[in-house]
Image (cartoon, rainbow, N blue to C red; front, top):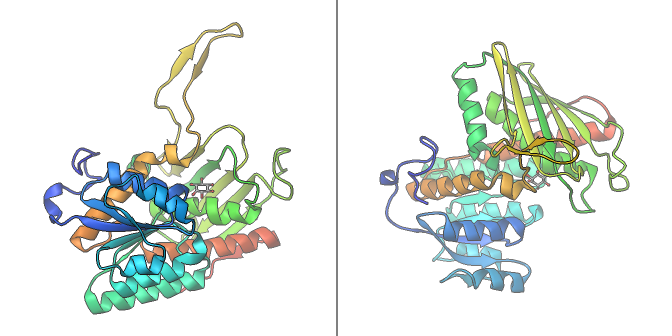
Length: 357
Ligand code: ISE
């Protein structure tokens, strides 16, 4: 793929990008990290994966074996410091992110960090401040957080529609976030911090304002829910100007991956995520049906978004900039999720505590 053959306006033109290839280290080659290695290798221009690192060295070795010129570096901090590494993708478990992103900032290397930026708001804020200090000295920002939905063409179109005034002032947003299933250790709190965190970011992205308060309702739980898990949840986000976003988060539907967002404005509404790509009709003994496909999980539904995210990250890093959600967005999401978890536990409307920018 070249940068110019994608949606107009989504990616920068090739001419703006300097010639040198970006040499990337990918830390953590589980589900997302291995996907990013494959994406950087086969569908991203201007970058090369030169190193991978993972606590499971066999896994790192098998991923590296698929990419010519890619080494395994056992210690992630050594990979970050490596002279032959220009930029880093952090896809390790969340508890390692603070140390690894901080090391990237100290080394002056651009970093794309999968969400969460860190495990809590205070540590995310420390990264915000560390990056600010670096930028004050060098004029360069380094951190991007992997909120991939911002790069999804449907979300980008919805954002552009709102910005054009096409549906008037947005008032209410309805969201559904459904997973066919999650692993057995996925807790109710993780439904906020791991799943609803995407709607938190989407809200800030689409409405361009912060979230002030969170309320969490626990509807009757599905009989398929794992023991102790309140599935589904209904999460209400109130923005600083008084808009309300409702999120139905249901992680054990047994059906497929469904992410829908509808923005209701003063002069109209708009919805994305209908999976209406191919509409198929069929006859049958119990009657004719009309159906569309449903993606099995987020890697299929947001595959295109990940491709665009990675390409824009590479292009921006080569230009010495960041072109996506940054450390502040990672911090804001953590602050809102902390309020969400508190609201889940207390059953009360909980205000978000956030530092001034
Ligand atoms: C997962 O970590 C993701 O980020 C997916 O986008 C989300 O749909 C899923 O619920 C999370 O567990």
